Image (cartoon, rainbow, N blue to C red; front, side, top):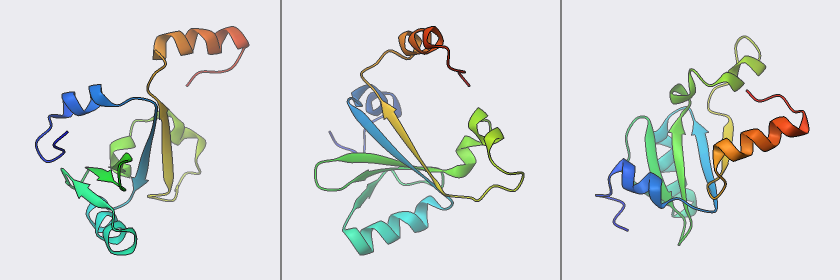
Length: 110
């Protein structure tokens, strides 16, 4: 896949298995740091998002500002720390099926 030209829709549809997103304060600065320290390559870099490759594995960086309406933020203190998070996604499970299974176990879904 050509990460420099892939559309967001095609990239999203290609994701499978377990996905990792780093939630960071400044995507551009974090990409520079990861490149300098770990030789991680950044693609499609913007202020809010980047695709990152570490050898073959692919992960994403998202600006913490892109999570402004995420219901999990309500669990953090009134002045939460910024740029300190990781999102792990399980791409091969249908979200609606997972929600129904989770409700059946008695958990609270945010």
